[in-house]
Amino acid sequence: MKKIITFGQHSAELHAGEHRAALVISEKSLPVELADVLNEAVDIHVHNVQKNDDGFGCIGITHDLSVSDLIAEVCDAITRVYDTDTTVSNARP
Image (cartoon, rainbow, N blue to C red; front, side, top):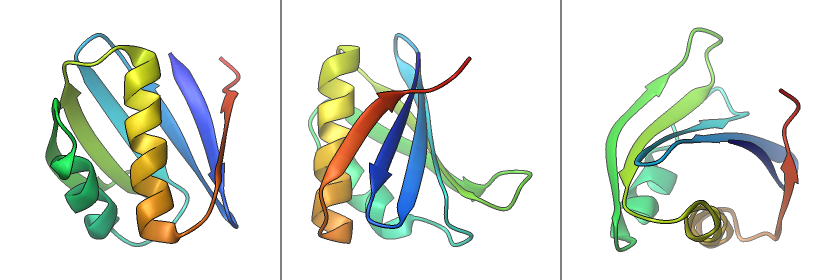
């Protein structure tokens, strides 16, 4: 499952599976603060924060949530860090 989360002037792509997910942020900096806020959520564990091959920030996540609950937690964390609303849409395959 791939979702695009738009917030402010940025976007993120969430690639989620049954117990693993990756969140790629359209910023060239490491999203350490966002990773810390995500780690505070119940049933989410951030296991790495790095830059992908394109230089964008990427957060590796393991979780025990449904997809809809994971999206809600990610959007809540984005709202807390970036102080903006989020919009979720389907990503093209």
